[in-house]
Length: 151
Image 1 (tube, one colour):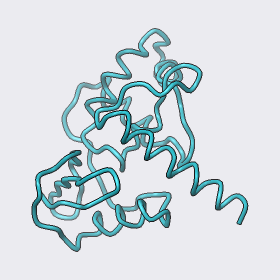
Image 2 (cartoon, helix red, strand yellow):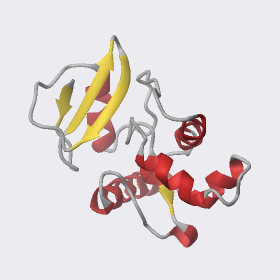
Image 3 (tube, helix red, strand yellow):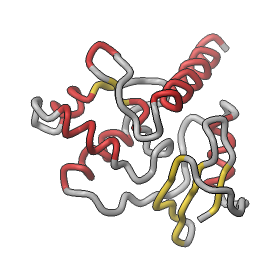
Image 4 (cartoon, one colour):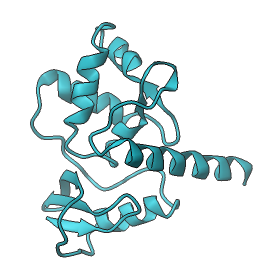
């Protein structure tokens, strides 16, 4: 695992070969790396990257969790989707809480953007990295999306 310093604190990034298999908030200080994931995370936090190209693999989890993570991975940069909308997309409109639990278990946060999932009415609730980190990530994406829209 290597560590990437970011505005939301250090992120521990685990790779197997060139494939990202884990991202962890609040990683201990550790070696940094010149890995494509580190470069892309740096560009993301600088507002220069809106779509990660680094290969990743979602390991573990139940079939439901993997389905949720797949839905999350498709949320466009700068947009938000509710837990209920993801539950509905998966065919179980009553599973919003289960979607929240799956989001909390996302093994590759930021790259698989669980921070873009919000409560009903856009309410900012729950995030494995803490609500302050979620707020910072959403504000970064909103600012960059607005700058790009206005050129």
